[in-house]
Length: 393
Ligand code: T4K
Image (cartoon, rainbow, N blue to C red; front, side, top):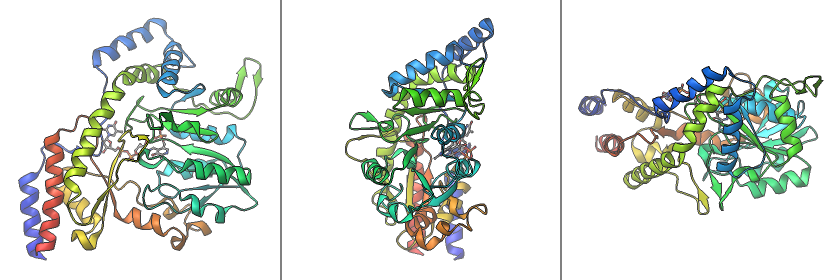
């Protein structure tokens, strides 16, 4: 045991990065370009409430995303909140995944809806359509899947179930910006898709998000609900919220849009480099690209099988951090483990076996365009060396 520790300490000292290598870094537009945008905002003194940058960003984003109806939000969580209100889902149950960020379950709770947790598929870590129907009851209103790490859910299967039972489908597409299936955006499926443009996302507006739907009337309702339900100066259509994206965010987004394809291309190279190196290390599993999908490489998750690798995910995480490499356990703990949800019948770990196992094994490695191939190489070497130390001693 102490031999392990000595070896690990030596390794950590040898390879410690001077600066932390975070799980992600935002893509930053050129500062002088952003200063020019800010100067315009100062000039016209229009700060929020659908100013010129909002409108231009909305148009350019719709072109990029190949969608016809889109409302911008100040963050992805408010977008999800409004998606539920737009569909008038404010009671009953919604079937969702526990393998996601807190926001997915919390927006249900805030809308007075009981989350019903469904297990995930072992290949994609997305909700398992084969396990949804068992969870449908008289109070079920909708299904809220997440395209986890940007990998598309089995949308055809989910659509069939929703149609059979008359349920809405709201996709949490927070990770899926720029992802396409057979050259079409994922938002072609479901009733509404919610995107996040948070600083930690592939594409950012500092904080921000968007709702995409395929219907003009639904988008009109979403738009009003994002502005307190105000339809015009004398009409309030419903209990809306302040979800509007401001001009600083929108102008940032316009500049980001020019960078996003290049960012995806850089990340793709990094994903290829990681996969090539890691595939030969016993106990380390990576995800492959899916045929027909244009991926965005938003995250780079690996799964650690402790028996084969020699030590477990938590120990690997600790050792990498000694070297100033800061991976993240997205998504551990499962939402079903949070104190506010764990007493729900659907939170029973016995029914969420794949999600439980995945959450105990997953580690998201650093992934962002500015990551150098040398850094990726060192991270991979570290993961290999740690395995070797544990299987040798
Ligand atoms: N649905 C899903 C499936 C989601 O994943 C999310 C958000 C949402 C809904 C809600 O969307 P938003 O309302 O957030 O738009 C982060 C993000 O805050 C969150 O947006 C994201 N998911 C989640 C997966 O990750 P944390 O708590 O892990 O972030 P934090 O602050 O620890 O940042 C991670 C790393 O990123 C840092 O170690 C360094 C780097 N970083 C972070 C920030 C904020 C930077 O380099 N610069 C920065 O400005 O939640």
